[in-house]
Amino acid sequence: MPRTTLVWLRNDLRLHDHEALATAAKESDRVVPVYCVDPRHYRTTRWGVEKTGALRAQFLIESLDDLRRGYRELGADLVIRRGTPEDVLPDLVRQVEADAVHVHQEVTTEEVAVEEAVEQALAETDATLHTFWGHTLYHVDDIPFDQSGIPNVYTSFRKGVEKRSAVRPTFPRPEHLAALPDDLDPGAMPTVEDLGLTPRSIDERGVLDFTGGETAGLERVQAYLWEQDLLKRYKETRNGLLGADYSSKFSAWLAHGCLSPRTIYEEVKAYEAERVKNKSTYWLVFELIWRDFFRYVGWKVGDRLFHPSGPMNKAIDWTGDDEAFRHWASGTTGFPFIDANMRELNETGFMSNRGRQNVASFLAKNLNLDWRRGAAYFEARLIDYDVTSNWGNWAYVAGVGNDPRDRYFNIVSQAKRYDPDGAYVKHWLPELRDVPDPLVHEPYAMSAMEQQMHGVTIGEDYPAPMIDLEASYERLQ
Ligand SMILES: Cc1cc2nc3c(=O)[nH]c(=O)nc-3n(C[C@H](O)[C@H](O)[C@H](O)COP(=O)(O)OP(=O)(O)OC[C@H]3O[C@@H](n4cnc5c(N)ncnc54)[C@H](O)[C@@H]3O)c2cc1C
Image (tube, rainbow, N blue to C red; front, side, top):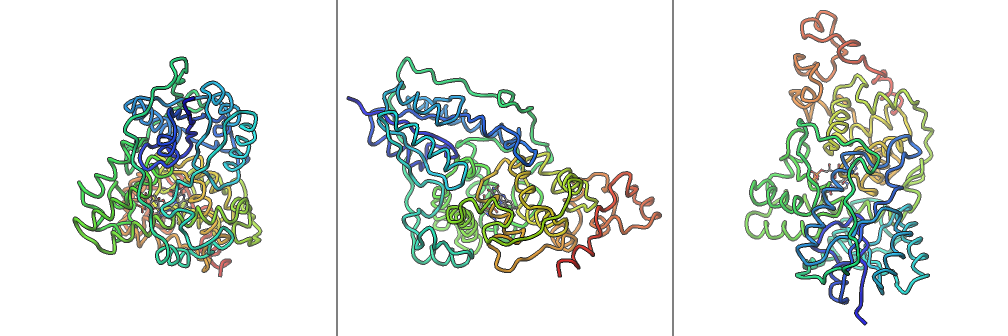
């Protein structure tokens, strides 16, 4: 009897370097790839925000659309079903008489719970669940640490893997797949409205008009490395704030699995061989190792990643109130560097790494708000939301994660350093367009006459500062 394998897709929406698919294609006569539109992903969370915002949902749909096109080109199709995987998969297994379900395993609480529920539900069928490790640069079986021994500090992790592990070669994309059974309805592609969200587009002031899918992700790699030759300067530009070119912008495709980190690694190695090998080419890989680090930390600490005391179990009395949170989230704190970044996030689903560090530090350290409110807000808004990168970085900046030094960011010094002429702040806060630098980063310091001269009234055209910033830094000393 022909062997049929379901490939259950989640954040691995690609055909290249996909072990779960490549193995199924090799070992089975027929592969049935399936994506479940899980209603739990479209609920309002306990933090009062949606779990998935419209911009990320749009990117996801584009990714599924692209993947379906890819599967059709190979001779198969992508099956799309509404419902939880634990309900959908056993039914589909029975319908196509599958023997196995392949999936890339996740490490965080909710995702692991779904895997367990699926495994239980499959026990009533003839199929078994096979998990693969598919999201990191370094494979779990190759790192020199076991789960409980994952270092708490990035440098120890990085040095360990750099010295004692090798990045595995990528899996080739299948060349051909058998057609799906004739009587199997592939299912309709959802729309943003179907998911209970209001469609919207990325503000044209954004860094990039992100389009979901493996095709667009691979094109971005081509453009960033080969066509525009930007990789050779990455280390010098990566702290930028404006435009597509200061950093790779690979994150959204990585988060949805449209790009594999190992594919990026292979491209970097080819670039080093053909063009130039320097600190910048190394640094992109260094950042991909940060991504690995947070995933492995998530694997180690389990549910603690979502506790107020974070992975390091550090009790802090978070006291900030709802109003403070509303100002932060809406970009109306009265501190331009924070407000510009939050407005960029709200309007585009993206924020630079420099911006993320500053707004997170401001929320946790200056406003003393529970960092998880910020992380949950990012989860809703970011197109590139990735569980462990997001929650791990948030805990890190909030002082309950894997930063051995527990730093805070002085947001005004940061603004003056990384946006010296105020171009970024003015891009997102046009009401400050005529305020000269460096006043643009502290508009509240302007006298009434200066305000009049520069065409802005603080408290009317632009908010007055919501807190005494200096006092909040003194509290942190
Ligand atoms: C509070 C906070 C929340 C964050 N939330 C997310 C998130 O949900 N999803 C996400 O992908 N990244 C997150 N990051 C990490 C980082 O800000 C983004 O990956 C980066 O800004 C994306 O832009 P890029 O692809 O141009 O990055 P580049 O600078 O070009 O880096 C290349 C890749 O390396 C990885 N990377 C870079 N920096 C980090 C980092 N600090 N941690 C983990 N991976 C990193 C990303 O995959 C990125 O695409 C967060 C950082 C902070 C401080």
